[in-house]
Length: 310
Image (cartoon, rainbow, N blue to C red; front, side, top):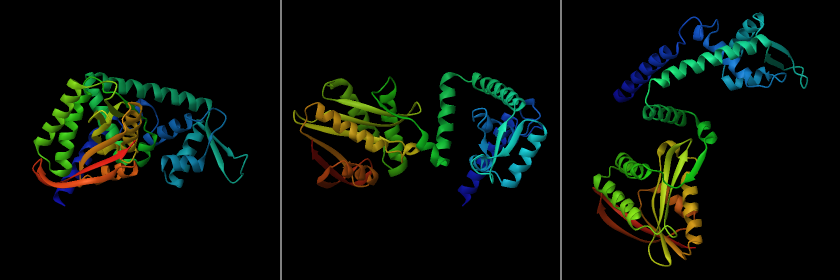
């Protein structure tokens, strides 16, 4: 409980810092007469094409606002001639609200000032630091917003410069955090990656990086075991991006490539503690063919060999 309370304090400190940074506590947001809630409503209405409007009930759902509070803000904006309300043509019981000409001008002013403010903040950071900041923002959103994962764009691609270092580093850090494995596992991954680079047959061996909105999210390798047999290695999905089907997509990509490369069978080695990965392998048609206890990476484990025909 003490650790949780310390974390609560840290979150509240961040909230105070960020609200001060973007000026939401000032009387008017970005030196305009609008509060944060008013500006948010203006922004949402601006996303609707002119003449179409948004039903008040839908606006309430999008912004998760109390109905009475939303009605009061809309009333204030209506008095200021920034929005107009009328009955829905489809259902007279519903109200539709849209920005007036003055409201759209207010949106353009808010939009310009928001862009200018954020350009100032981001412009103070080096490129690498901006990427770290945006990655942290994506991580926060992915962890707290279930719908963010559904909207994210997933791309499977070949490794770019720096990606193989990420594969080694992320494997070492993640398996230490989740399973308590020691540095010998990271060393094993480094050897696998080094062998892949040094001995790779491009026609029959390949690696993939799963990328989500420009950020590495997972990886997998297909390497040659012998002339007829491929081996799947180093399947990993970063915890921030789990639940998006990335692991299954990576495995499917390996299977498709292995067939095109002329392999007749594919194998893999894993450990029984990696339950999520094992479920992916089972759904992809792999069968458990052997298992054996061993001590590796500082832990007593049960290694498993899985295989399937192609």
